[in-house]
Image 1 (cartoon, rainbow, N blue to C red):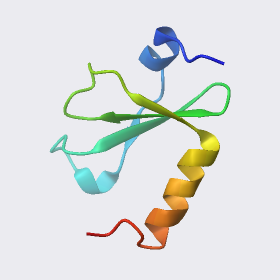
Image 2 (spheres, rainbow, N blue to C red; image 1 turned 45 degrees about the vertical axis):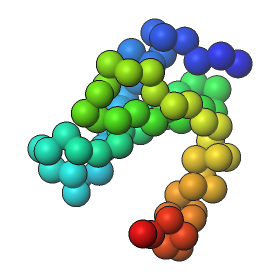
Image 3 (cartoon, helix red, strand yellow; image 1 turned 180 degrees about the vertical axis):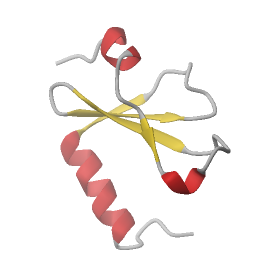
Image 4 (cartoon, one colour; image 1 turned 90 degrees about the horizontal axis):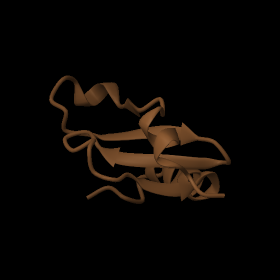
Length: 70
């Protein structure tokens, strides 16, 4: 399934509360068909990166375990 521009434009984008009002954060949105959209909150006009729900879940699992800490 392909994600349409309309789906992305109407997506319920969310960002972490930790980012506050700075706009310096990633935003995510659940999309139809088991996809997840990811975009830079400072540049919402740019095309988002779209991944499957299983890829998103693997990333979240790794983040919770500290695998991406710098």
